[in-house]
Amino acid sequence: MKPHLDVKVKPGVSAPDAPYWENAIGDKSGTDVVLDRDVARLLARYALPVIVTRAYAPSGQAWSNEEIASGLDRVYRLVLMEDREIPPQLIRDISLVPTIEYARIGAVGHTELPHPEVAEMSVSTDARSREAIYLEEAQEYSRGDPSIIVAVLDTGVWLHHPEFAGQLIQGRDFVDILDGAGAFFGDYLDADDDPTDAVGHGTHVTGIVAGAGKAMPRGVVPRCRILPVRVLGALKQGDKKVGAGLIDNINVAIKWAVDQGARVINMSLGVRHTGGGLPHQDVVDYARRKGVTIIAAAGNDGQQALYYPGALPHVIAVGAVDGTGAVAPFSTFGPQVSFVAPGTNIYSTYLDDDYAYSTGTSHATPFVTGVAALLASHAKEKYGARLSDAQIKHVLKSSADRVDGAFKHPKAGFGRINALDAVKLLEHRLTDRPRKAA
Image (cartoon, rainbow, N blue to C red):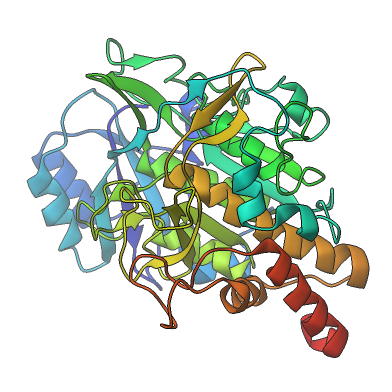
């Protein structure tokens, strides 16, 4: 992907039709249109020739009401025809054009990847993390429903791991980063249909959600289907592995996962806000309108800080607790944190059909994702009901174990996730008021 900028026109502004950016990579026809005359003048002043494309594709033949309400039909991707740096002043100038809502450079977001420790253990290894959320008792109600799709947006998934046999549906790779040679390893160019994991982070996360339990503790919802979506490439910075992906392509991946029917989206990642609008806001709003629950990692810096998408109002941000149930010292905190879950020395799936330990809010997040999917599954299986995003959040919030007497704790949010109490509360609500739950 060449350097580009995303430009969103204001509501009611007449804007040209243009092809979706992925389609335009191979066929440039229809990309020579003028988005806005003032914008075109500015691009000419800076001598930056571009092709005009759509940042998003409609889910059907035409834009849906939810897509229009979220403004996704008004976002364009202007791709430079030359590999040149985009002057920040150009972005400021375009943002001042009366017809333009915002203009942003296509930036790469970075998130630190915890390094899994490979170890050969048994199915009982790390049973404590599953016991901490009362998973075995909760799974007497449900182990997931195949009609409930959980999307994992991460570094991809090791597709042939025996713990995922029969669970994975066709995923996608949205990693397409320019000038990655020398820094990135694995696949970092050309989005395609192969979401294979090269570093193990996404594979480890996926096992916590839905591992079959063949040589590890069973995942939270092993009967749900998993949609693997690769949004992060990997590079080395000193001794650390860092995940990196174009923010705009992560946005496209979120929308794509929603359009593929995902009911819950796990994003064990987070980027700091660098200006020019909140990251992922438009597509998170679209997911909310479609009733999709997004759950993201709070961060691992041990400070009060905001990482996105977890810091957005409609996203569940998850912190980590250690083996004693106390909030882990590395867990990022603040009012955006909704829940905490086990996040230290978690045993799960890894590359090459292997298994590993890993620590971080990345690995606490899939426990909450799994419980959200468990609630959606139980409602569907037993009552034929489709829970809304708001209903899932209400049950999780009302059933979590408070860490003190406060309604919401600055480091633990509404408390430690409790799978058993969540499903029992759901049972009570659906039995008591089944019509309202449907």
